[in-house]
Amino acid sequence: MNIGTITTTPFTDQKPGTSGLRKAVTVFQKPHYLENFVQSIFNSLEGYEGKTLVLGGDGRYYNRQAIQTILKMAAANGIGRILVGCDGILSTPAASCIIRKEEAIGGIILSASHNPGGPNGDFGVKYNISNGGPAPEKVTGAIFENSKTIDSYQILEAADINIDRPGSFKLGTTSVEVIDPVEPYLKLMESLFDFDRLQQLLTSGKFRMCMDSLHAVTGPYARAIFEKRLGAVEGTVINGTPLEDFGGGHPDPNLVYAKGLVDILFGEDAPDFGAASDGDGDRNMILGRNFFVTPSDSLAILTANAHLVPGYSQGLAGVARSMPTSAAVDRVAEKLGIECYETPTGWKFFGNLLDAGKATLCGEESFGTGSNHIREKDGLWAVLFWLNILAVRSESVEDIVRKHWETYGRNFYSRYDYEAVDKERATELMERLRSMVSDMKGTQYGSYQVDYADDFSYTDPVDGSISSKQGIRIGFTDGSRIVFRLSGTGTKGATLRVYLESYQPDKAKQDVDTQKALASLISLADEIAQIRKFTEREAPTVIT
Ligand code: G1P
Ligand code: ZN
Figure 1 (spheres, rainbow, N blue to C red):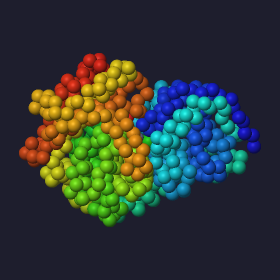
Figure 2: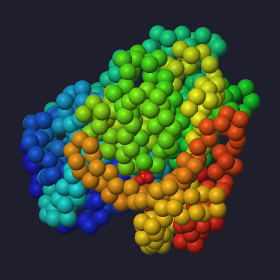
Figure 3: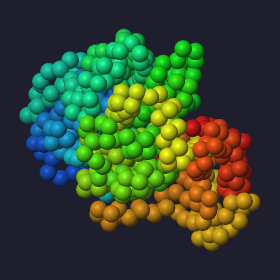
Figure 4: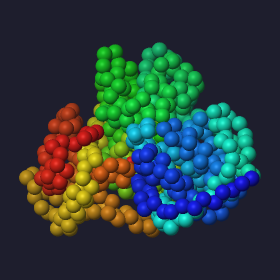
């Protein structure tokens, strides 16, 4: 066995963002770039020698090459056993599931989530810790510190491992197991949901669904679960073969990028239920026939109906949502008499709450929902949860949502994204807002009066750590709210996100188009933040 120690020099831009290190593929292809970051991960860990590491990715361009490099580096660094998904495939939720089940020290997941792939697209590396969740800030901070001073990395000189089919190999003294990426995940889903009932629903001939995997990682999972295991007709899963460039698409399950699915669900003879997932399988979009369920509403509805689902029928310890997510779930939590936590954006903030048994369900407005079954958000889990509710209630998606609004009121919600705008100008916009918020309380803007305004800061109730500067919140006395923050996952310039929300308890006023319901708030957002001036954009790139 020959371990090479390769001399290198640091890169200055290896600070992990909201979800790992994301860069253009061409950046990752620079000599030593990937290796430096991976070695920085190992350098920041303690006591990993001889332990198990989970490795896989969303199948995007550069996945296979990166896997071979990381296998050899992990072996050279003394990892005892590496579990790698067949074909290099592991969805983010499946990786989280396997880390937990195998009591691994952690996992390296290769994904840039919903960002486009291919030679001109993005690539990413995330490190997840032993609870199966994204590395918390103290770990990502340590990785970044290491990346700034790194001067060498370790790599085994060895031939590539065949990852095309399951099998066991040795790399030096390290065992490498190429595993079925689906089976452990399917088992976990079977333990949570009523698969007999789901099978009856999907084979009844009275219910049709369409799952769009957007040529990303969930294809093999969705086919195995919906078509093979639950008996849905072949063709239920569309775009089910993972492609290195996602077929040229943008693997983000929203109304803009999953347009094919939207056209099916809003077209003639539409199926009863539609869903899509993103590049690495942790996001979900839920559609009914001619009906879109906002992710914030979805979280609230799953919470309100959790008692119908076997894995959650014992009751929920609490729920958690990210700050920009609408307050729809807060109202359900209040009625159930359980705690509702408000965390900064990013799944990593849910980890402590889940570990401490303070929250059972969590969600973000950005099409992410999940629970304590793993420590990541989970796209197919959300789809199965909805199917389980639909099977028990025998009502349409639209009816379920409308009844929910009737009971709890409706939170109109929309997010405006201004992508790839000038970074300096976007930072100026945020700085200006930051300087304004401290004395905004009480200010009247037309019919809106500011109830509170701040730059969101979060104190973790479990470990006391403080995360500040998490986004500007401006709440009004009528329950509506505007939130501004800059994305932590973009790779070009800056992305400004503006989150708009208003509350309507009156059933007679709930059947209004969201953009119409939010129109005055939208123009107020521009008035307050001068969005058009700072972004030099007349309109957002994406509205969800
Ligand atoms: C975005 C979403 C956030 C999500 C993250 C990773 O981060 O807004 O909710 O956790 O992707 O999927 P952002 O780009 O806003 O920092
Ligand atoms: Zn994702």
